[in-house]
Amino acid sequence: MAIPNGRRTAEGFRRLIAFADAVVAIALTLLVLPLAEIGKELGGDTTVPAVFSDHSGEIIGFLISFFVIWVLWRNHHGTIEYFESYDWVLLELHLVWLLSIVVLPFATVLMSGNGLKWAGAFYVAVLLVSVTTLVAMGEWGRRHRALLATGPDVDEWVASAPDVGTVVALVVALVGSLVVPQWGTWWLVVLFLAGPADKILAALRHSRRE
Image 1 (tube, helix red, strand yellow):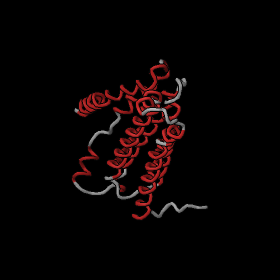
Image 2 (image 1 turned 90 degrees about the vertical axis):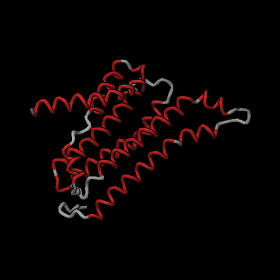
Image 3 (image 1 turned 60 degrees about the horizontal axis):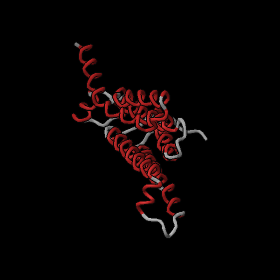
Image 4 (image 1 turned 90 degrees about the horizontal axis):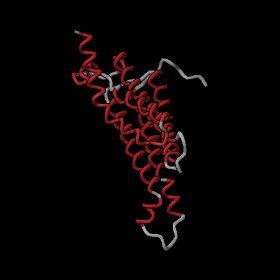
């Protein structure tokens, strides 16, 4: 079926965002399904502390991924707030971003398994794709002002630097998880370096301008 390239309406943009929100909501729901399966297998002599002890990996994986998807959606929401239209590039970037979101529940199951090798690296790789796509959306908007709303807050956002510190931190975490896979998701601690990395990159940009 042919898709017209020229027509871009406000209704089409609203449908794109509504679709993205629905996919995120489904991904959050899918995260809890493995825990629901655990509940079905419990016997009458099992206690709640025992369940948390025996399935701590699955529970921690659920909490981490729930928080991760929430943060990813929040950053997507914050970025899209500056847009009022879209083009085919923004549409395709959403395809990649939503793919990373729906894969996260699967990556969580792998990560929460019994020490599956490379599971942590796969999880970090999915996060890297998701965050990189979000940064690309923002950069595409900064370079194509016709897609953005108008106002001083939008101008301030356009002038701000992209959040590439998180991308750099995830690249470090991915390399680390490939070199030392037994550390698993502990490599995500590297994300705490994202803030300092952004400050360093901003300082380098400022010095180059001067």
